[in-house]
Length: 80
Image (cartoon, rainbow, N blue to C red; front, side, top):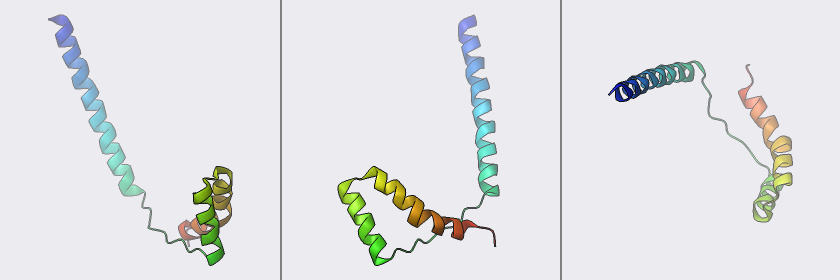
């Protein structure tokens, strides 16, 4: 019986902690507002991305993200 009670209290305590964490996460999500971002690709970038996807070229994919998408993302999310 003592093990069962101990386990029950441990579960209750764990659930309480999870509820607190869940509330903190919800509050944090309200604080952080991420707006939708539209990414525009030129014809050349679209072709490049298509090649990356067809070839499954991971190295080129990372380069593409850094060269083409990151600047647009940085611009769109920067505080004006």
